[in-house]
Length: 155
Image (cartoon, rainbow, N blue to C red; front, side):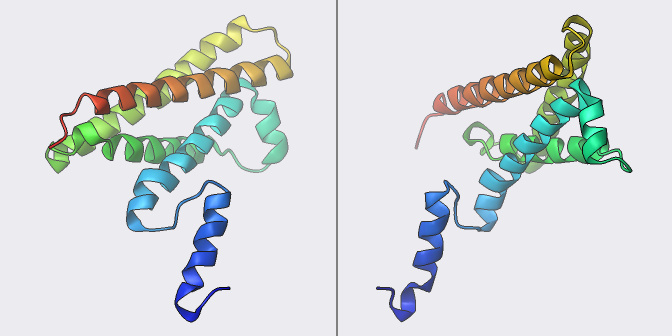
């Protein structure tokens, strides 16, 4: 039974059941912004590989720039908060984070354009190829950054 001081305990347990974190400034930068970026990145892969599907969902609006901005913010936030950059000056952290986010996003768009020209012109094949390569790149990138973070000597 929850006491008067445990009103947040129920909220936190519900969040944990869904694999979420309590909303704080730190969790916004380290968890929620990168998660939003990953969702935007995946949607951007669908948008590039199968634009007709996105047009069916959003017929009156081109959401490409919204997805790109979400991807850049999420990826940049993920890189910015990594352990190996903690000792760098803030301007350098911002520069490295922005560069990494741009390289991932725009490089992926180029890669998807090339893949789209090779994959059979089936909307299902294009969508699967886009999502598959997007998820693979996100996983490889996060594994790489975790590896680099492990190289940092703990004090």
